[in-house]
Image (tube, rainbow, N blue to C red):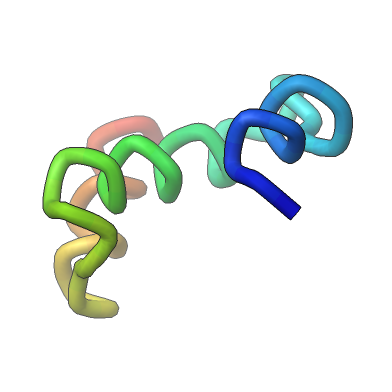
Length: 45
């Protein structure tokens, strides 16, 4: 499944965690630590 297909058809934008995690991965060439994702999530909590 491609990322575009997932974003368009599967992802629920009502839940902030999925878009934040995808954004964190895209900004870091598909790699991110658990701590890095946690820090991004805390910004939106």
